[in-house]
Length: 259
Length: 372
Image 1 (cartoon, one colour):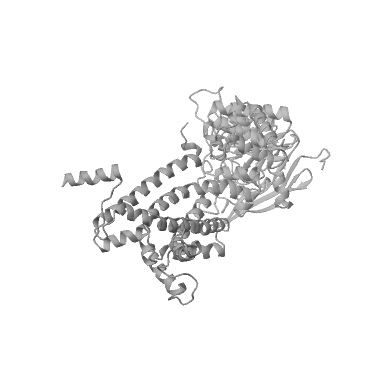
Image 2 (cartoon, chains in turn green, purple):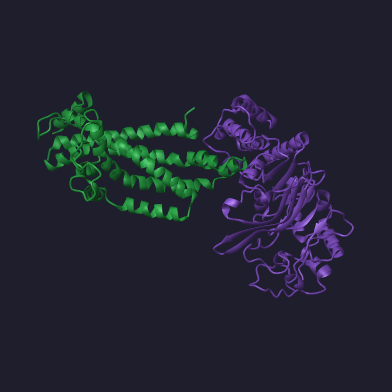
């Protein structure tokens, strides 16, 4: 048993070999690399969507605190955070997919194509998954940025910035957001790491052949090497993400820099 | 916009109120003062007496907190309270600048000191970044930061507290202000650094000729530098006089309390400092009559009803006080206080004619020394 474990570890560390899939007798490494582009496509797109939606909402609702707009977006955000992603995905498909949907806007599940094969098809097929995956993240980031920003706005150095005679736009856009965004970078790094390890639910609902889908198939088929491989791979991304976050932090906050 | 010899800054009947859930906070209640060119006005008072709020209002920095402001703040003939946002921004950090209490948190931790100075310069002057940087180095030298060429590229956390306050002063000076408002600039610093910062301010004032409004709770700090002192209590100025007058012939019982609570070298070491008893009044539900009566050792019963106005002190030009005691009684009390008599004795002998049962109009707060 321990000999087996030793061999398994040795293969991974020295040969990056995760063994063979029971199901289709392919090397797991090959499977993962085949699936990686889809997962990266999904993750990167979703990150862009949720930052583009979440950050402006967070800033606006922090500035216009207690306004109608603030209350509306924040209760909307609460809904988006609370909605489970698989439910949101299914509802999204039911309402908007152009095969079964009520209003046919987006491409349905299982239409994923590689970016190099057909860029417009790639974009169309991923649009709905991006929005669905990004919804809860956007909501979470908006709330996080809002509360950070409100806290930062009461700092003494914001008063200093105003006392210097800077326009309010600079005070908020430069001084306040700069401080409030730093904790978000930490969370962002970890979220990206987690998603690269496979967005199991989203990929399954939309039938996107990514690592998450691979893990799901592995579990369904009791394909142990595949499960082990995807879990390890996910862990690897999370560790890397942590490292990247720590390094980025040093760039963002001069106080943690080594001199 | 010449002010043809008039005061540089004239604040008249300034009120600042903050509506809160518990009621309206009367932070500043009708204060008036003037500042001449090159003069140093010290506003003295304990925490919550409205001294910081009044100065923030001068720069229009209370608007963001939903304050309701009335009165006039005239600077070089213009009412600052009537200026629009852009005109006010041109004043802020330009002709009127401000330094704050806590230099540790008043600089942005993520930007280099030089960048923050350059930003202040470029907010008011149309100069290139290089020229602004040269000016930043010059300013750091002006406030006596050693090696300014190197320090300009450092972050605030690489500076000590005293050095950071020097950076704040440099930033405030970057556009040749006519008035520098210093809000407790030395409170967060230790005593030796305090003295350095105060003498730096005094020296810079000599060289640059700006007026300084120094806000502090420590009368000991202001002795060296003040020309005029305004003592604030519960949002009002209760005594206003040239500095020498405040120290030699103070008129208000609150000022006496402040003076008696400063440690002195010429008193015996075992002599206890005399604190002012009681606590500052609530600015939401203020005491009736004279605001100081619940803590005043010399309050008469009538003082709980009559609200004193600021009036000139007879025979002492420039000295104004809001106190209901008669001038001759005040003079005698201060003489005896200096001699070391206790307020209880003085109250009995000099004020006691009408014993004060203190029929408080509200649940009596601490009123030591007023029982008959």
